[in-house]
Length: 136
Length: 135
Image (cartoon, rainbow over all chains, first blue to last red; front, top):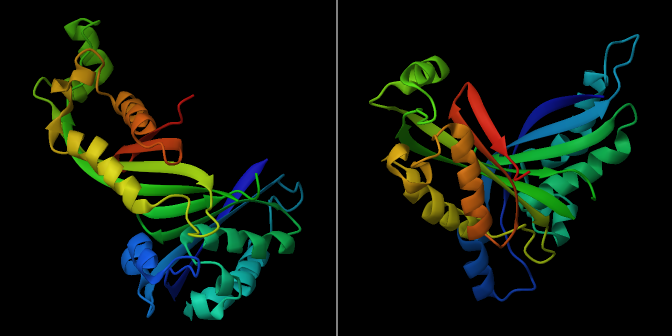
């Protein structure tokens, strides 16, 4: 079994707000992230797939194909977007880094056939990242 | 849905690697330049990974402010700009980055009950790092 990781970057804006909290609770819990005008990040996405090395190609997965899937399913939807307003998952869920990692997993997992998705890592900033390994 | 969240911090400290269980020659042979009696310092980078279910309402594993405050209070304020060898936890134990990593894991395990502590990873330099998961 070999693990292969592909990186990509996207830039997007978001804000944190839950309709289950009062305005005051939202401000207290989410702080500056509650500003309804939003704020932005340069996200770094790392997608790790695993599988056996194909004896003929020497590949775990066709990297070009993985790149295309990542672009089509994730970057085209999230890059240069206001996540709360333009990405369907975040019309109902708060676009925290945790929920972004889960959404990326759910977008990629059904589209990968050559290799198995192992981990989705999303960096919000260089000092904060979330890993999601699927439903454990 | 369980997710792992990692936060990165930096602190600077000095240490000297010297074991009272070894002779002067053995210490020098084992630790090399790190055995210099005057000590030396590093800019450490600390990565703390916690895990837990993503809260349906907040979308978060835990409040980052709580984690930051705990790490600041229990770890960074304790070690930043200090000499590790004079601290009580390293009175007998050699302050290698392995031992410092284990110590920080134990401190946070006790100090941060709000989420499961998965891993502590400590970079001593850009070229080496150590991980401890409690096992």
